[in-house]
Length: 408
Ligand SMILES: [Zn+2]
Image (cartoon, rainbow, N blue to C red; front, top):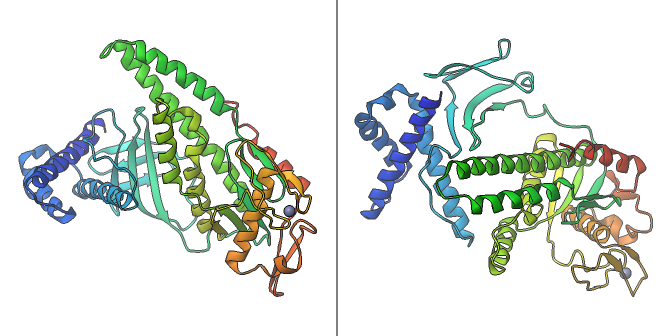
């Protein structure tokens, strides 16, 4: 398996090398051009590549061009982008078997891949009924772990959840990673702190270790492992939170934060202070993760996620609409006009919910009522009702969502 995957990696690097050479000669070679080169030139020159699955080899070419395309798109948006690097043995790498070349055996817990053979495999859950497997991806992480991603297709309505007739607005932040319009605030998990301390300690050790020494190599491996754990915990945390909201609400309002831009600003700020992109920004950097999870889960389960313009959501009073300026460190919203006093994040969450409902055109309710006074039923021309309210069980549920997180 190692040798085979290294073969695919070799092909990846060769394609990139030829592409770069062509570019220096002023030729911009595209995906199809490079595929021809792969088949008629690279494969002839390095005959051992003929021992690999031909389709998977073509996917390596496609994969390379996909990343190039993603980079060019980011560049168009005005983000700073680097260039595509050659893949070393240490780098994460994946091989995709599309349409054919794989066989999943759930009874014997093996997967058979073309030209590689049978690999023992732990399937963490069965496929849904009448799932049609489209492709599998063999992934090697930079911590030498191997995964198999299975992509499958199911009939449209397989995952649709029952209607809940409820709407919620969610404000995300650093102190409370989630504050919602039903009054619940979920503080940032403690493991961020623990991890950032450990990461700092490791970084100190690495900077003292001699370049190229065995010790340094070991420390670097440790650092990669730690980062993997951070990423996994973060993703696990968001998965639980987003699944909770998707399970219990039909309409979810979120701020349309420009996450890529935010991340860049954070990096910039750190640079100005002479620091590296630091673990302090763990939470901020996971907003993109949250957004992605909300979006795909809403799609999958038939919910509606509305991204609203984040401008002034914290400043405007949710009850009377007055502009109440408060700097970042002021945690309470206190309105001089209508006398409303509540948490800063709660105020924002209600504003987000309002904007989301306006976006969907179900804001009739907002004209006659104020969310704060009744905070109960939102009528939409008699068709359906959206209820948003403070609910004890809601808070209890979120607590159980968090149970077990951070104890690892
Ligand atoms: Zn007010």
